[in-house]
Image (cartoon, rainbow, N blue to C red; front, side, top):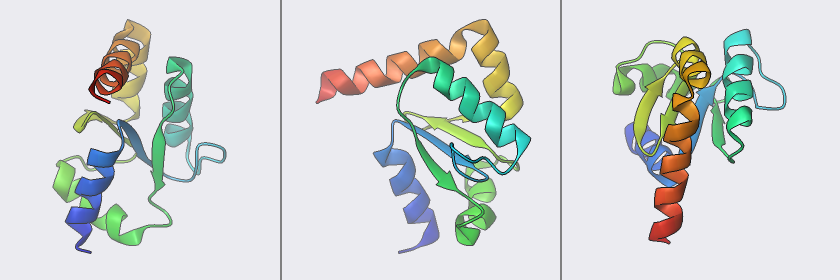
Amino acid sequence: MDIIKKIENQIKKNIILIYMKGTPEAPSCGFSAQAVQALSVCGEKFAYVDILENEDIRRELPKYANWPTFPQLWVDGELIGGCSIIMEMLQDGELQKIISKAVNKHKNNV
């Protein structure tokens, strides 16, 4: 499968998806750890892709997303941003709202 198609499928299939270094249980960088912590506060399940295990995604996603760094948080098919944006949104209460809205939207569409 073409790597861009693979990325698009991952984003489409998962309401909340984080591309990160490591896993939620064992993040491999501080920024990924902070992002996972912020997502955990929101209380919804989320999917992840360990970019350290997926060289092709690590290489192509920044071009596809027009976002150069990791982690990258995607909610309902939209790029939210990286660690600093995630943390700001968490503090403002915006992250919880976006995630809750996306989850409820998909619950109602099932």
